Image (cartoon, rainbow, N blue to C red; front, side, top):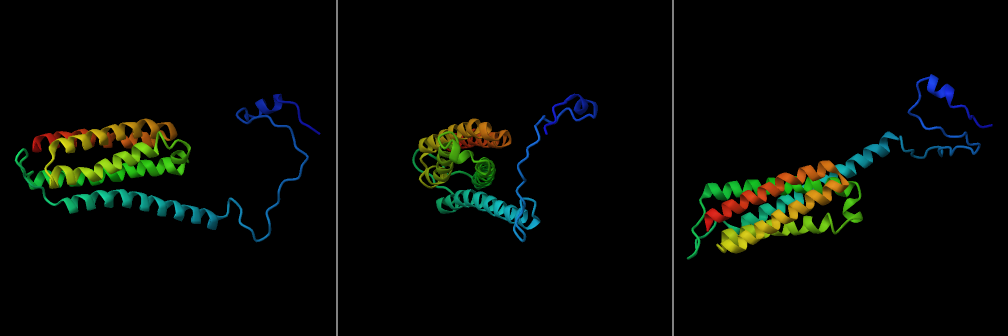
Length: 197
């Protein structure tokens, strides 16, 4: 028998619930000894996997950038560029590693919602391009002293971060907001790169 009266529902204060006719099909009963969606062990397992994937994503991006700075060394001077100061290199290193960690966090948030697979052109491609440009900048700007190549890397980082802001923002607005400081860092790094030229 179906309940068709909606007036009593409004009188009891349950106006936000949608009206649904009563279904006579039996509910699926949980299997004895089986895990349900409310099982605490299952939730803990999901949380551990999620935390593990977050740590891997952030560590990979930050470590890739840190290794790129380590391999490039403190910087060198060429005929057209002067050697950067140790303080400038330290600021560039710390800021780049932090920016890549924040961008990886944003990418992980998008991945957790299925956005990297659902819209790879708008999310994965700009993230990968931005990460590769950030890893190439220390070798080009510091080790080789190629100022204009460093500026090209900064432009690629800024464009990739701006594309990530848009793409990530469509999937998760918080992830899009997290990508904004990375775009600002790319512009600041371009200013630092220009001062080294």
